[in-house]
Length: 131
View 1 (spheres, rainbow, N blue to C red):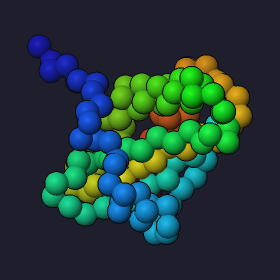
View 2 (cartoon, rainbow, N blue to C red):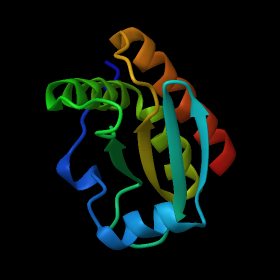
View 3 (tube, rainbow, N blue to C red):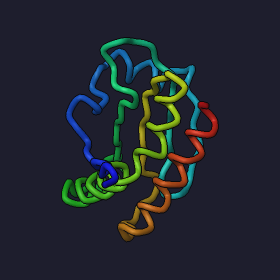
View 4 (tube, rainbow, N blue to C red):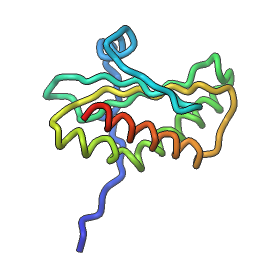
């Protein structure tokens, strides 16, 4: 019987180091959009870090109400959780680690299926560019 892949997103996979976040946005990182999302990524070094550290940002400028911001973050988190193997598998084979940030660009809400497709596209392109 084939081993079933677990779709998880643990606390250790979240990017919460202020130093890494500053490095990610100050320079040395690469980014590209797939509207309504933008991905920013940067290779990182460190034994204590997971293969992929993830940050999700939905600016208050886009949605004033926290309910809408939280909905978008939940959609992105769920899409990443289900398709993170597109990025983690090639990185593990190459022995690399990366810090990733998803940033919301639109002023309107989108369907979960549309967000999922964009996250998948961004993960595939990022994997190709890093490895």
